[in-house]
Amino acid sequence: MDTLDLSSIHSKEDKLAFVSWGCELDMERRSCTFKVKDDLLEHLLFLRTISLGAEAKDELHVIAVESRSTYHGDPVPIASLRTSILPMINVNGLEFTPPVTFILKAGTGPVYICAQHLTLEEDLEEDDLDGGPFGDGLDGEDLNYPEEFSYLGRG
Image 1 (cartoon, rainbow, N blue to C red):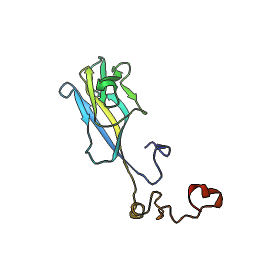
Image 2 (cartoon, rainbow, N blue to C red):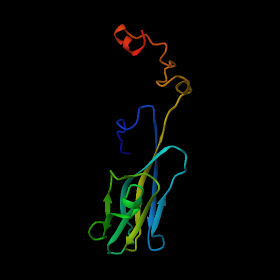
Image 3 (cartoon, rainbow, N blue to C red):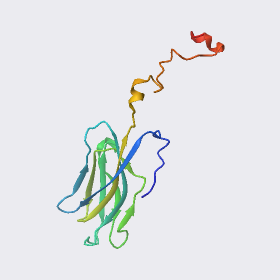
Image 4 (cartoon, rainbow, N blue to C red):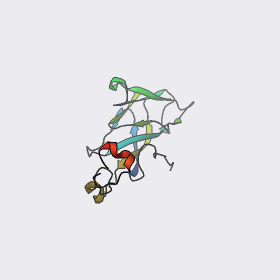
């Protein structure tokens, strides 16, 4: 599994949970939507690969995505695959905020989409909830400031 350096986005106290996710698009199922519960957690879908199945015809298969990240919510093509030329594409780096809908715009499939669902949980300890803005148990009144900061109204 690839490791992601999310330290610039989230603090070390946050918990990351990755779960594999995938779907198949074909003539019977032209679209597939990835949804999450409204649980107040941060969710991301990291797209990994899009590939054609062994039974796919040698025709152009166009896969589009529709999400809150796309312009006006219109489907945006993200891959064009053909069995004899490009049967699979690695799309690491594409990430979406759910809900996300994948659409087979052209072709008969089967097309397989593989992704990782990231859930970010904040690690809030009980002490942090009780202890002021910095989670240190101090409300700022008990701090001893040096004399040069007496202009702040503390001395």
